Length: 183
Image 1 (spheres, rainbow, N blue to C red):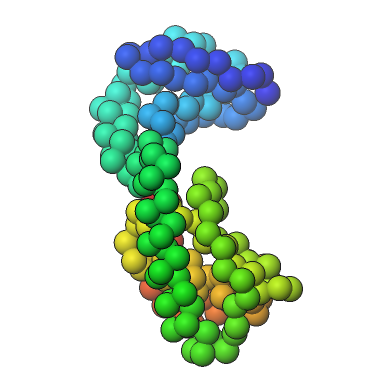
Image 2 (cartoon, rainbow, N blue to C red):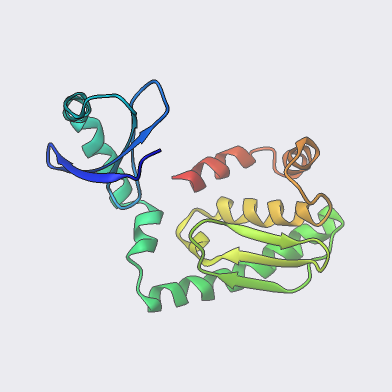
C-alpha cells in the first residue's frame, strides 16, 4: 500500500489511498475530508469523475457531520470540556448506583477523560471504570448504555456472545444507543 496523498477534486479535499481492493469507496471523516480508498491500478481521472458524481452525497455528509457531536468535540474549548466532565461526573455515579444492585456488581474507582476513540473502559481486576466526557454531547440513553456496558465487563471481560447476551438482558434496546454513538 502506498502512502495517502491529497487532491482537490470538485471543490473537495480528497485523501486518496491506493489499496489492493477491487472497488473504489469513499467516506467523509469528522473533519469533512473525503477519504477515498482506490484500487491500485485505477486511473486518477476515474477517481475524479466518481467524486464529482457523488458530490451531492458528499455535501450532505459534510453538513451532517459539521453539526455532529464528534465535530462539536473537535472544536471544543477547554472550558467546554470542563463543563462536560462536571456533568458526567454527576450523572455517572447516579447511574452506577442504580445499576450495581440490579446487576449484582460493584464498581471501584471512577475516572473521567476526554477521549477520541473510546466511550469507556473497565479494569475487571480492580473494578476501575473510566468514562468519556464527550458522552455529555449525546442523549442520556447513550450514557446509560455505556455505564451498563462497562458494568457488564466486571462480570465478563471480553466482547464475546455471552457479554452481548448480558448487555441485552439488562438493556434490550442497547443497539439504538450504540447506533447514536457511531454518528
